[in-house]
Image (cartoon, rainbow, N blue to C red; front, side, top):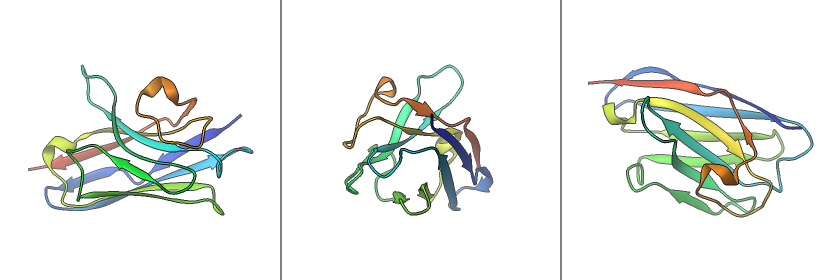
Length: 123
């Protein structure tokens, strides 16, 4: 069993930065891809960024050049550095782990989810 705990969310002004962290417990991590998703009320959960076990990354077009996903396998942690934040980035952000090494883009491909952390960007 894997448990994920996100942290680092909060309120920030447009143009600011936040760094989200995802701490994993359990036996799996280094051989698993990680995804960061976000969701706003009334909309589907969308993939923001993903990283494979080998470090390959994938980003939503809306965050390319502003967000950076990374991982520290020794600490069993994933990170999402978010710069140049915009009001439209406001959402609950979730980290997720899938039982596979390569990146996946649909939520059903991920087996474990954190509880989410709220990010609010004011204009």
